[in-house]
Image (cartoon, rainbow, N blue to C red; front, side):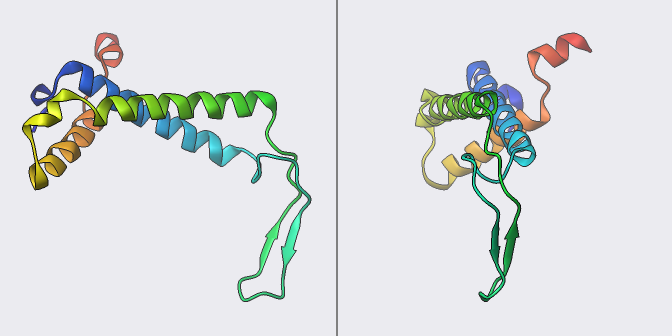
Length: 117
């Protein structure tokens, strides 16, 4: 399936979902290991020893951005999964079509990217 096989609003929603998921994951990798401030952790006497430094927790701005991206992710996921386009598919064909949408959205430039080129 190509990008032309999907309605533009569905393709845009999937692109937004993928962007929000990637941005949230990237942000999460830069943040402290806990949302709330916590002391360091050391468990050397268990079968899988762990060491974690003290965590200052997230700043209010970091919390707000993570929450904002999560809301975008939930909204776009609901838009994609509940889109009327899927009514024409069932069973394995539905799975194949949804996977094709993910690949098409990842491969195709967004309208903003296309206009910049």
